[in-house]
Structures are given as C-alpha cells and as structure tokens.
Amino acid sequence: MQAWLTPEEFAAVRTSLVVGARATLFALPLAVACAYALSRGRFFGRTALDALSHAPLVLPPVVVGYGLLLLFGVQGPIGGWLDQTFGVRLVFTSAGASLAAGVCAFPLMVRSVRLALDAVDPGLETAARSLGAGPLDRAFSLVLPLAAPGILSAAVVGFAAALGEFGAVITFAANVPGVTQTLPLAIYAALQTPGGEATAAKLAGISFVIALVGLVLSEMLWRRTRAWAGR
Image (cartoon, rainbow, N blue to C red; front, side, top):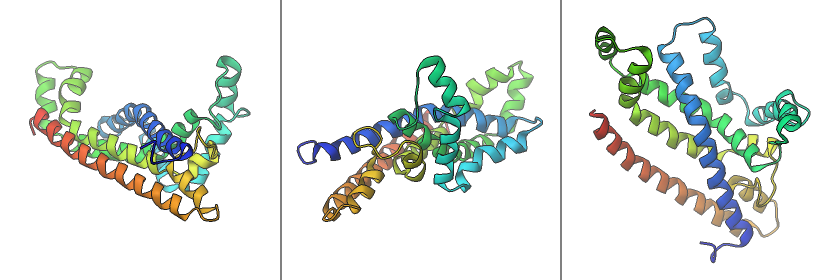
C-alpha cells in the first residue's frame, strides 16, 4: 500500500486506523459499564446519565469538539490539570483525535450494548440469584457473556464511527498531516486543493475498502461469538 500511496496519504490511513482503534479500545469498556447501569440499575440520576451519554449523538460534532476544547484544552479544568500535573496535552495530538472520535462514537456503542443487555432473559438472572450468585458474579459469568454479540457489534460500530468522524476531530485536534489528519480530514484537504479530486477519490476508495473489510470480519466474529455464547 505504501508504494501506491504518497507518504502523506499513507500517514492518513495509518492515523485513521490508530485513532479508530484507540478510540474503540478506551470507549468500549466505558460504554459497557454505562449500558449495564442504564439497563440494570435503578438509581437517582439515571435519566440524567441516559441523556448525557446520548448527547453526542444529537449535538453537532463541532459543538462536541468545542466542548472538549473547553474541558481538555490547556486552559480547561481537566486539560490544564493534566498539563500541570503530568505534562500531558491532548489538544492537537493523536490522542486528542482519539478522544474526540471516541466521544462521538460512545452513544452508538452504549445503544448497541444496551439493546443486547435488554435482550438477556431476566429469568436467568433470577435463577442465578436464587442459587447465591452475587451482582458481579451474575454480570461477568452470565449477562455479559450472553450479550457478547451485541458488545462485539458495539465495538465494530464504534470503530466505524471513529474512522468517519470529522467535525469533532478537526475542532479539537485540528488537521495536522501525519499527526491528527485522518482519512476524512485528508479527503477534505484534497478537495480544497486544485486538482486534488483524484487524491480525494483514492482516499475515499480506501475508506470504503476498510469499512467493507471491517463489516466482513465483524460478521465472522459475530457468528463465532453467538456460537460461543450458546445462542
């Protein structure tokens, strides 16, 4: 692939894969925990948590990116603390691009996991409780394994959403070639350049191939996971 692409184009592909994978890796456990709390929990503030977790789904991505800039910028409460305490800066970095992509993909992942959890038969949990299984035991030995296909689907959906995120990434992490320039940003930059239509078409084709390969692999893994879960 590197021989077919220019170094800048290859860097955009690599950055997209790294940003998407890192966003999924860190957002998925949080999405599972949030979905489990919404599906099984009965607590004060549950409605607020539901609304907050789905807010990035209805807000314009640029607004999400601006909110991240206010919170995680060097002058923000979280970003300033990270910078002063650990010397960590997220804004205009690859890690910041992953954060922006992960936040935008988070509600889609929560929704997918929650649907899978809601589909688990409550009678199985009642039976496990009657046999002395505690909440954590029921969660990790019964509910989550049965919801594994939905969790896998959430990971695939999250990865695809992270790969395609544009507004939040360019607002929070900017469009820095080789650092934060993902495929959507590279396509945008090519379209802004005279005679860049061929480059944009090439990158769009690569995006399509990556998405198609991901869907095929997810289907194969989903079938294997369903068989493993005994469903």
